[in-house]
Amino acid sequence: MGRLVIVSNRAPSTDGSGDSGGLVVALKDALSKDGGLWIGGAPQQSENPSASLVFHQRPDFEIGLFELEPELYRDYYLGYSNSVLWPALHGRVDLIDVKPHYAVAYREVARRVARMIAETVRLDDVIWIHDYQMIPLAHELRALGVRCRIGFFLHIPLPDVQTFKAIPEWWQLAAWLAEYDLIGLQTRRDLGHMINIFRHILGGELRANGNMGIKGREVVIRCFPISIDVTGFRSLAAQGAATTAPPPLPRLIGVDRLDYSKGLPQRLAGYETFLTGNPEFHSQVGLLQIAPPTRDDVEAYKEIRLELEHLSGHINGRFGTVDWTPVQYIHRALPRDELAVLFRLSKVGLVTPLFDGMNLVAKEYVAAQDETDPGVLILSQFAGAAEEMAEALIVNPHDPHDLADAIRTALEMPLAERRNRHSALYSHLETHDVDHWSAAFLKQLLAVEQIDAEWLARLPRLQPAARAG
Ligand code: ADQ
Image 1 (cartoon, rainbow, N blue to C red):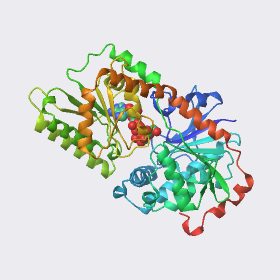
Image 2 (image 1 turned 30 degrees about the vertical axis):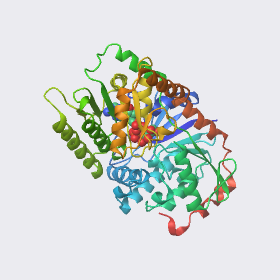
Image 3 (image 1 turned 90 degrees about the vertical axis):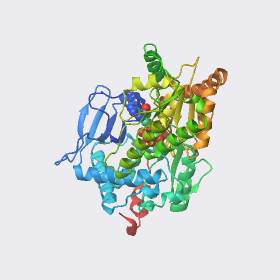
Image 4 (image 1 turned 180 degrees about the vertical axis):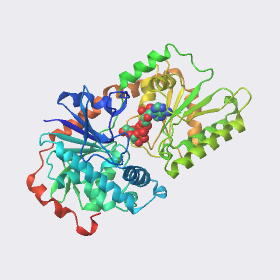
């Protein structure tokens, strides 16, 4: 194999700062082995963007930044990616903000980035594209004659076919996805949706080997549940906790980007129901909710922020006393080592999204626990993580009574049961960490045969002219 070429909306820093956690840690080894390249958006937009990638050599791998004009970036990123695809793929079709120029910008960015990539890749390179901001890239690269293996990993969920069809460009998106050699999804749930989307929209057929036959070629689709650096996070938590005083009251903790998919108002409603039904816990427990802002320029995000401030104020006003604040709400990001300690020193981890590709917080909470006296994870049935983490207390985040019951069960759970549940969850994570995830994806991608030149020559016929957007 030649180089591993990663493509994502944002590139890691050019000096290696801020590498802790996440994809960079997962892919560093694979990237440094064969002189890898990470292509991603430049941190700043530019009125006079470079027509080619701007390269930076880090000691471990090379970075190629693509620059975009501010307006194009806004329409592609805040517009199509986060006001159309993000809500639609999270099943929130009510929040889609359709504007034709968003779709045009999304396609234009893919075209430009593909041209920049085509200038630099070699036939034996392997390209791994990440997430919903980049779906048309394989199509654009194939149109430029790029014959490398191209894989795609979707970090967020894929909804059922009817919800998918609420996106105006539904046909086009399905066709773009069908041009990858390998599509990786987080869960079996999403894999099922992918199969149905290909079946219903493109007439694809599921083969006995699990691949999809679509218009004369085979697309490999598999699920690869993403994970974290389990032992690294565990040591971070253990080290920090050794010098940190535990909180005065047993603590419930929630850590989420402030996003409507994370179910924060529903979580607070469940906590309020718990406090209403269990007065003996008043002044005996506290909820710490950490929710840093994201995508503040998108209207739906302003609304969720106001709602959360209102709800936490409401609960504190209703139940709080001079000595007790039932909800502590922090609206900013914290360093990873601080988060790890906060997780370890919290009796209950609340991870209750309405729909989530995976949810790494669930895995971080478990990894951070002291195995001799672990806390309890309360996990939404709609988080991708629920497929692997059955020993958590699984809840329906839409039902405040279910959530309230789970909070009480978690706070009263005997030590032996907490240890049993934690030990089952941790042993699974230990063997399914983020290295396992990236190795499994790359192994599968390398097993795909080099692209068929004949198929490549026929490619334009896959696009009916009327649909080209
Ligand atoms: P996200 O939607 O961003 O990721 P998630 O998987 O929960 O969601 O990851 C969030 C990360 O940000 C975690 O590592 C968490 O610790 C960190 N974080 C959250 N709040 C923080 C705070 N206040 N301060 C510092 N760090 C904070 C998308 C998909 C997920 C999928 C991931 C990875 O939506 O479903 O799990 O990609 O594929």
